[in-house]
Image 1: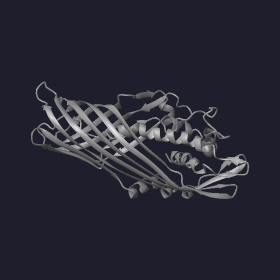
Image 2: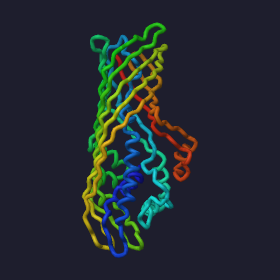
Image 3: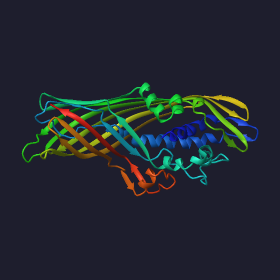
Image 4: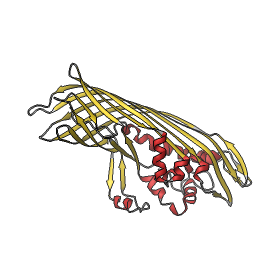
Length: 363
């Protein structure tokens, strides 16, 4: 992880030298090349944003039944897996206009750690730690459910410092989100009949990040024998609004409750990147302020299944989430991933799938 963050920063910074020129080196063609990189990164993030809205949801029962209230005991954990951020054409592709193709630039910047590029092209995990989830009954067979997720900059700074002090000083992250659902019980879980409900959902996610390039101490990049050094800072802000329905069925069997849920979703999102950067080529420094803005929308059909263990008041939740449009699972090379062999991950795919784990108390 501590190697992957600088990699993403190097990619983002390539756009800073869009019009820098020095001597025989003309960096103008990098504008189109790094537009391709930005599109790849944005597509990789957007690929998992919609499924991420379901991340951390630990309510598997279709109805509260004879219980009137529940609350998470520990912060629920959700992880969404998607394709890597760097699904780029290879170095021989005619896509690249600059004399040195972007994949070659990345290999030079990474040096002996260039195999991390293979990992970045294959897999990306998006964790979601919900602070609290709760729900309670309303009149007319209605229920209200809500989740909040807050990761303040101070807390993420502590986490990043634990990963690597250099990254902790140079990177700041903040995440805020949540969802609210009103659902109606259609059939109570009684006798041989499973519980059945339908609900309307709204969710919001906000993500912001700041990067101080000087604090990262990036190595100079060699362009035809001359050094290119970047400095300054980058700010990224992403927001997503999600609307959907949940058709939910579950059946308590002694202390176990298997469940299924079908959830059509529609999401509107924005991604904005601003910067205040410097590019030094052979001792000549220029200032730049590149930025991009993307406004997109997407729809999907999400399938959730799993099992809950009912211990009277405590309930343990284990759930799997799939985007039914394009889920991909191939764990053939998972052993290479855990062994650190990032160069051999051709048969590793976890795309548009997620995992939720949590513990709640029901009263």
